[in-house]
Length: 281
Length: 160
Image (cartoon, rainbow over all chains, first blue to last red):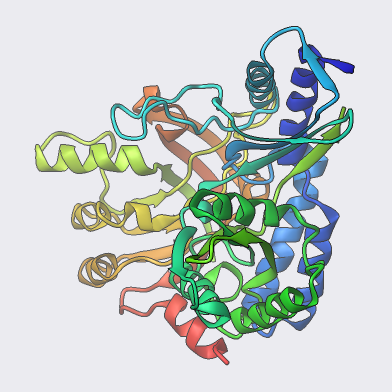
């Protein structure tokens, strides 16, 4: 049994919150550069270059890439041989969020009750924490600041068991068409297929963590991702929705087994600023 | 195009309050006539800077209130993403425009803001109404006073 102190968790989470919000992964930058070479619209090209310039400036100035520093979403993989000591694990994560959002000048966007009074909790807690027990004695924490512009364009839909690929694709395309310029394209599209009602939503979010543009490990699904990306980029929505050939820079599908009677599908849309950082303790 | 001068920052909650105040015929925190509203909830201001990251938020959430504000003389709004028909019709009627700034270009945009002052609803934190002095604030005209919509035109031009 390996012991990990909650104070170390808090410190790690604090740093993750700040770094995730200040610096964008090189995969996103490379992908935007790649697509800007073929972007047909001059305005679109210019927007892509402004986006890249902003990433660099945020890193240099140590400022948040986007003012919407999101809800603090965590994916935690806890080795079953790890013993967390010194207090409650979830409290330790929330304390890290509190410290990180304060020190990093990150916007606190969480309200206590979504309907009544809508009072801000003022420290961006509570975080949304997904935990998974895995083998081993490591603790892996991934932090994802998820902004709401793109989150609002997402949906879970229970398709009919035999609807198959055709309906999955038409659901994804429908969501992106309706979203248009709202979720800050170019977007990354996370798709969860299978599981059940709540599991496919989580899958669609985990899918966003994959290196952008890296194809699915299953050749069948890799082909679906490629076809969908091409179809999305033929819609004409373009950077910021002002028209162009770069609407999405990646479609990531994550698949799990499901019940014979259902076909749950979730589409989680992510703006170009796909921020996430991982640490292993 | 580039904007220099004073613009006002406000978003969801402030719009709800303005709408209520207009219905109740109360005096608004600033006179809307001829003014520009920027939909933004900036990040906290780091030490030594004028304002934190300050990119546009999605405009459609302000759609239910915008025609009311345009009727009071508001001339331009700045945000991101397309507007609904009621806003576009109201812009034609009131000869107003909608401008878009690049979503996610929050640090670059913050550099064009030269001063920031909360003028109403301080208790709302980043949702308070701010008076911003900007210099060469970059934006693109998305809807003009004739009802043209760059979102529709752009997609039609690039649809394959």
